Length: 479
Ligand code: GLN
Image (cartoon, rainbow, N blue to C red; front, side):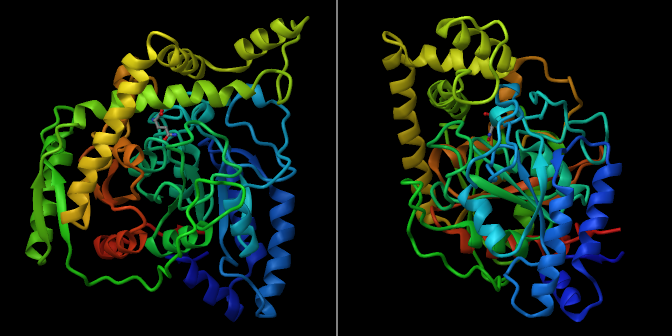
């Protein structure tokens, strides 16, 4: 089967009869079946085949929605009525969703097909997909490497052509970092742009649903459709959603880059070099480039981990062996039900974060850790706002390195430092995107990250399409 670059191409072939949707779905199902990535935890095969027939007839009758033809995988922390959802945790064993996440519902309403649920780090905590209760996901190019995390399955599936696009969640970089590692686009909109209803909470003031695609047009379409007010999420914005398409590829912008990021000792030298030559190239093309200082860089990861573990300790208290999923066989009374179910049901990383979060919130430590981190978050927001008052974007690498080998990072602090360039957009709530613009001499790709002011998704997408112009080599591979 032919290779497509974006949904609109597929749609014109589906309309003209050159292609039919049941065949498209079958080819994905075959690819998923022969894939060894462990990206999918469950494939909704029978259901997607039925949907394909139904949507194909809508296409023939010219009554189909905006996403007819698109086949999407969803991260396993998004609910879909009547389907299992586990957040890659044993604690949700056997649990079936009793409602559908608003973002997922909006895609279904536009005739997207949901093909299955995708592996991730347990409760979206991790940077390598090594914290899943259901095994690691492999990097799509090199089996012994990680795909990044926590939405590792979502990134790997799109990169390997197992679905057209996928959903992930981004609390500290979980869409952008795996996108960078796997060579696809990963977008996290402004905090509050997309409803979090039906997204299993990790850290509620950071969590945001995002998407993985192979091209900017599809990302624009998905974000536009998923955005907007929702009675079920009081933090979602009712701001008008602009029409993101068509994308404008010719504007000149003011772009800031952060000096401390480029000088950071963890930054791979080849990534730094490629980044600098991109800045030169942009300057030559008529954009204004400004170097800015951001001394708060070193505080970002500690602040992120104090605040998100605090939130997680509270959010995850609902998993108690009574209301959801797993209950220990050793439970004999209320106390042992809580203790044993949580001890057996949660993985090591999740337990570590619950304990850390409980500690930073406890009497006597609250002021020293939690309250202080809240103040630093405010300072980070103010300083970021200052930069974005004078500039359209902040441009920085998405991650300090390319994908690393499985089991290579044993020190938890080292793993947490993976998030050094991505947590900025979550601490400040800004929209951000990772674009697969470069390849490293080690054979792996790496992303460039754009951060914009709140609700500037349109500009972010416009500029992304300009940057991707020559790089749209990542295409749907339906064969
Ligand atoms: N790696 C980060 C963490 O482990 C980011 C996770 C995320 O964005 N969900 O918290």
